[in-house]
Image (cartoon, rainbow, N blue to C red; front, top):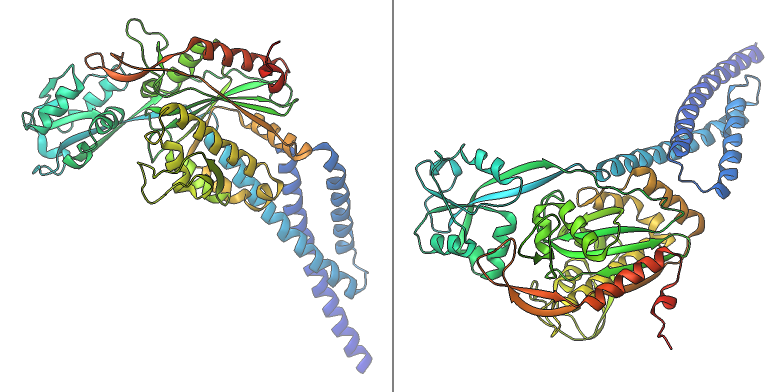
Length: 497
């Protein structure tokens, strides 16, 4: 009798274990094979690691078979149930990371719009607090050549009964506001920055009562390259603003990153923001390169292509937030400064001569500094190259890729924009994981002489510009072309006998 009771209990336990085994097998099958499918679809696993993946797949299949066989000892089944739960949990975690990665690259790749931001500005002590309060006011405007200006004027009609006064001089517009000859002005984000650069008090003397965002499509000028087989050029545009990365603004960082995946070389060619160049498609007055960004990323790309007579395959656009967050997520960067100074943009970040371990906020201040140097913008370009180099070195370390992967994706999601296709990015990731190469990073700097001149964007006032030294332009072009041809940096810069 006791044996029959014991047998019935065993049968019930076995039945429960079999049910749990089937459920575990179903969970393991769904999670692991979804993970496997997505990994193969992404194509980021190097071929030399694929054998381990297939071996592990075989182990999973074996576990599934053992879980589904009814007449295996219950102790063995319990063990494989626990093992399947662990593998299923890891597979679920991996699957979520893959979905996060796919979503991230879909968001940053092939961006097809930009946002031009306009402001309704009044004096800081003005009675006006909202745009709807200015219906009877005359609004001063500075007509912009940007394609978004007409759209901004249309949106202005929501606040004002078409009472506008056009100015052909930006400084005159600002002076009339400050001297209360006009009470409201409409100005683009880039022109507001220009006025603040001209007079640092302007930001404290005025206030924004309304923001008008105008979205415009961007034609993709991508020139595709076989990124794991041949050299290609990436334009790094650092816009001088915080907030949404799609915002049009002056491009204060202009660097061409030439990458050769076969020779493992990266060349960073820095172009000063004040370089006096002909904006693409324009005639007459030349302009500061930084002003090209006001007309959109394509204007900057085409202007630099004209200057250096090269093809730019892709672009990467970053802003102040990108640098701050990225430096912080990789644990800071150590830079070397040739002088001690206090950055004009952030006095809380004193830089000492020699090595400095910087967080994101101070790395940005170091990158933006120009007043402390006799060579001004030239030296700022070198500092920017140094910070970028340190970030690349940190991010390509295996321990950083593994331990900071999710944090890096989260940091870049809303502060990074590129037109490189997702498949090309995956190919580069696969190549890096496969070979884990050490990259040789070298710098090239374009140079010039300071001057004052009228510009295409501001034809009625002289601005500080840098007149290009043609020999440095020619040298940069030759180095970029030489790297693309497979030569080394040392070969291209060796002194001729």
